[in-house]
Image (cartoon, rainbow, N blue to C red):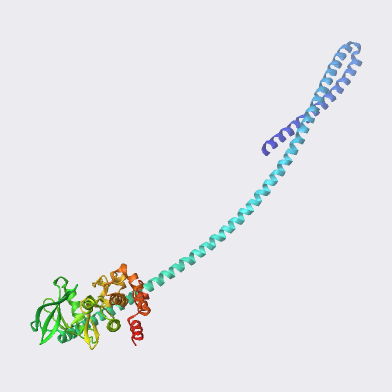
Length: 440
């Protein structure tokens, strides 16, 4: 638009120059007219009347020219005025355009300044980012270096651990060899020759591990427990040998006395022979309350001895009236717990579930990871309830049977022994203290 206005302005200037030329021509015509009139006067004087007519014609022609010139002058003035008005308008428009252009120039300048500031800011940010990137790269490089150093350190530690493991393995092998020698020496103390045992056909009982019969050994009547063939395996034989080594070291008046065992063929365990069992006495009429307290205390002492055995507790896992054997001592009963067959060291039980009577089993018996002395406490509570009610209490009958116990102290003890959460049950040591308070 600015270029167009400039072109129009140049056009107007050209027209103005043309008018000025026309004004010069008009002045020239006036001068020629005056010269012609002077010549006419001179001719009139020379020629007189002969030339009057010619002079008149010339005069009229000049008058016509004057009128024409005036007309053209008037038109030219109008055109000039129009052009001047147009020039004024164009000048005003040009001024407005110049102002607008100045505004745009200012805006462009401001935007250029803003753009420059943005570029400077972005450059600064880029520089900062570059520095941060370099610092991050340096940090990563340091971390990688530290990681390599740590890896080297771990490699050294691993090599040292491997060396230590090799040494420990050698030590373990040496200890295992020594232990085998000790086992062989220990076995010589409890291993008996099968030919020295005379078996009878008198069956004392049957269980999940084997059958118990009366036998003769070196002139003494003993109880011989013959393990079933189906449970014989290299692993079970090894476990059996370890348990017999432990059994040979156990001495307690309320635990059935271990005499020895065979290692040829099916293993056979020899123990002292007891006249009767708690199960038989309950089936034949039961026992009096003083005997119940006495038997309860004997069984608790036997289980407490097993639970506190070192280096690891021994869990019975088959506490029942059939495994509580009795002999008379004056007017009362002396109870001894038979634990050979299902008992085991606690670190070894993670591989086996409870082999005992399910009617006495604790809720956690099916999960070997939760086996603990508290499992025997639960079975002990069922045994107490059985002695009082004179029958094996079924799980759905226990609550009603417990409520029927008249002695509050005994009822409370049974309830706490049968708590489902095994961590909340009392220990055998707690039970012994409570029973001693009741008896004495």
